[in-house]
Image (tube, rainbow, N blue to C red; front, side, top):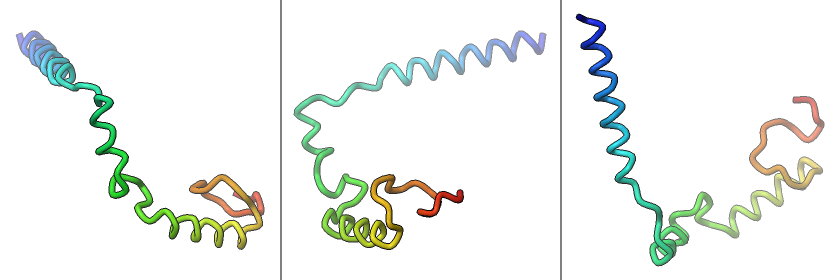
Length: 76
């Protein structure tokens, strides 16, 4: 009897999750302007981020691959 209650609980939980996920709606084109604002970006100060990247790449002697762990020598 306990197995039946457990399966009933699991199926109710799955059904609840499915119903909650069906309420998600995609972002409409007129709403995308709010997501494009500067305070929504990963780097709110774009000029400062570019200067930081330039200094990093100058010190490492590499270009590209920003945000990847490891050094410029290739010895990860």
